[in-house]
Image 1 (cartoon, rainbow, N blue to C red):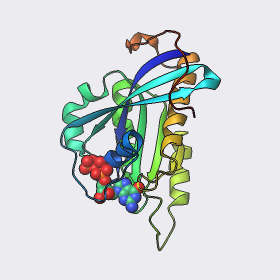
Image 2 (tube, helix red, strand yellow):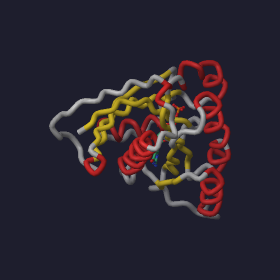
Image 3 (cartoon, rainbow, N blue to C red):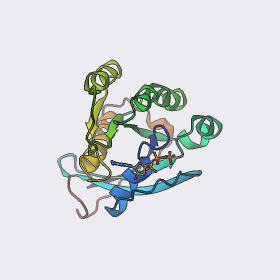
Length: 197
Ligand code: GTP
């Protein structure tokens, strides 16, 4: 297995569930309490892609979902980022409207890089108009894939991260992301272990 370590950033408005998604990935737990992220949290997620003979270690950076904060620290936060997890809250349409700004902000620092959209809180029963058409329109216009996720039930959380890891590997194999970005590549052979997706 060829091993790679890459930095990924998690973006989206306050309260959309970024920290809960990380907690679901890292500890397989969920907490109803909303504790606003102050500063940055970095966590590690290993994704095995046997069909690509890769193990990708993602260093996932979660910052508080305030655009003013992000603007202040964007140079450090987005430096060497190779993938984006863009999260919005299915129960708050405004958070979908914000995604364009979030994604553009990362792209203005590092260019166009692999991105997955998480339409989060899919476990909540919603009355009224479905957002499906709006989500599809947004994703089509940016050539992005979205998955409806739930940090509460765990639905599609690992799938979305695996999809992103696969896109990142493909992107680099096709030379779309320049290797001159100095992201550390650990190329070594090691026995297969850990989670297979
Ligand atoms: P900031 O740190 O302010 O950027 O917020 P955040 O995006 O990290 O949101 P956080 O993960 O703290 O979640 C905010 C609230 O939404 C919490 O009360 C969570 O319990 C709730 N929440 C997060 N994900 C889900 C989900 O998938 N389903 C439901 N029902 N609630 C969720």
